[in-house]
Image 1 (cartoon, rainbow, N blue to C red):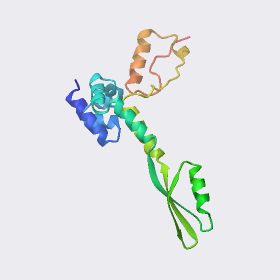
Image 2 (image 1 turned 90 degrees about the vertical axis):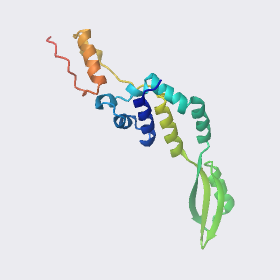
Image 3 (image 1 turned 45 degrees about the vertical axis):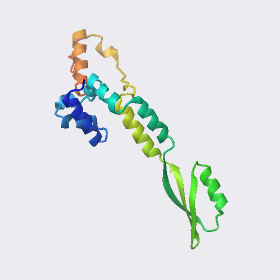
Image 4 (image 1 turned 180 degrees about the vertical axis):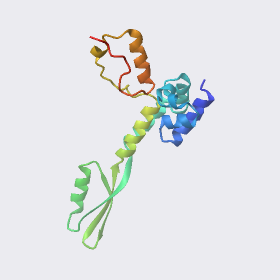
Amino acid sequence: MATIRQKEAFKKVIENHGNVSKSMRQAKYSKETAKNPSNLTDSKGWKELMAKYLPDDELVKKHKELLNATRLEHMVFPGKTLEKDIKSLLAGVNCVAKKIQKINEIKHVWFWAKDNIALKSALDMGYKLTGKYAPEKHDINFDKFKDHSDEEINQELKRREQGGTSTSSLPKKKE
């Protein structure tokens, strides 16, 4: 079951447009914990909240709707341009002319176009919130750790997970 703090962070994520770290800080998580949002998003309580309020079947339904999301756009053409040419041009990029109006020597055209920005934004937020993105890949040069003990390596990994700098804190081994 989700904790009170997890529920508060969940509410704040919506207010903060998907910013989990900021939401965690506002829900009174420590700064160190909030630096790594997976502390929250990998928890059982968070996953229960996601399943309840943003279930996979709802995401799929919205994804299907968003694949066809459109917005009304406007363009102008020279007045001599034929309407059939305008419609053909728009159809070539999957747009549909809704109104063509000639004012003076200019044709104003209003048409429906795919709303790719809304699509990307909504999908990105949904995948982030549900933890569906693949983890980031990190290249590690293991040769530089070959002379260190497992304990030293584990301490270094823990330091990096807690948001440490990229400079290694491992002691230099003498050759």
